[in-house]
Image 1 (spheres, helix red, strand yellow):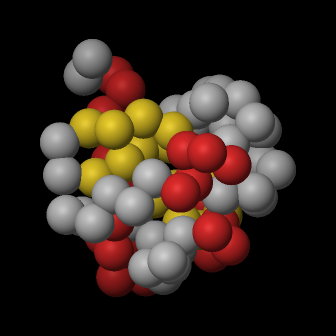
Image 2 (cartoon, helix red, strand yellow):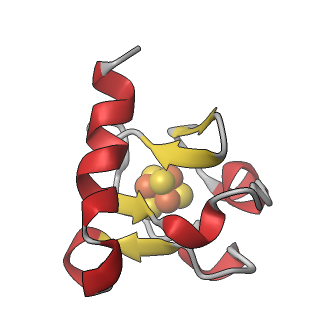
Image 3 (tube, protein in one colour):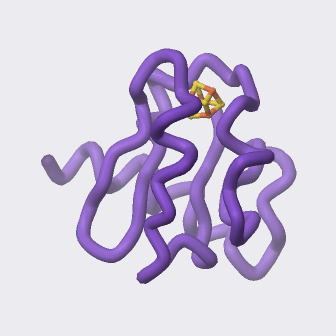
Length: 78
Ligand code: SF4
C-alpha cells in the first residue's frame, strides 16, 4: 500500500484524489489518508503530490515511519 506522510499536513492539495483509480484517498482533518486495504499499489498518486508526501510503504522516510500506522489507524477509528 501507499502511505501519506507529514508533508500533507495543512496542505491537502488533493491532486492525488483525482488520480486514484479506486478512490481510496480520504480527507481527514489536517491531511489526507490512503485506505490500506483499498489501495491497489498503482502508484498514480505519488508523482502528482506537489509536496512529495506519498510513498510506497517500504520507502517511507525514517522520520515519518509513524505515518504508515497513522494511515491504518485513521480508518479503524471511523
Ligand atoms: Fe490510489 Fe494508486 Fe495511490 Fe493506491 S497507489 S492510493 S490505488 S492512486
